Image (cartoon, rainbow, N blue to C red; front, side, top):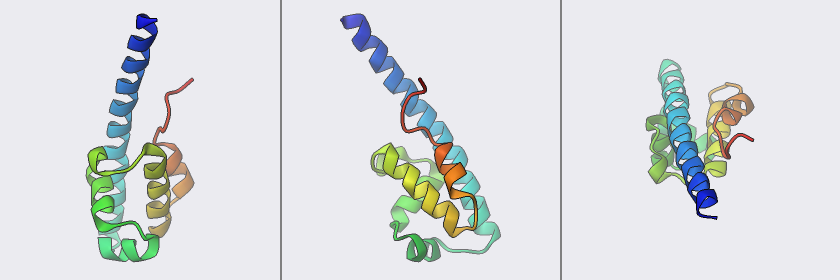
Length: 100
């Protein structure tokens, strides 16, 4: 039983690391796209109703400030759509559970 717990703990740690890595990549892409299009975070907030501090956390890959991963995935989708990007594709590239 202890080995099962250790394996689950290890998988959770790996998932969190993967989420952090992907969020940094996605966030940098969203930020660069936003800047290229000369759109402010406030403009994105008005379109998505996502708080500016959460948008900033997405752009900087700060998982600590954000809610559960499934909500982060939704935020990514809304943010990308607001920029005219494929929100579904970008959102699904952010893992919310470990691969089976």
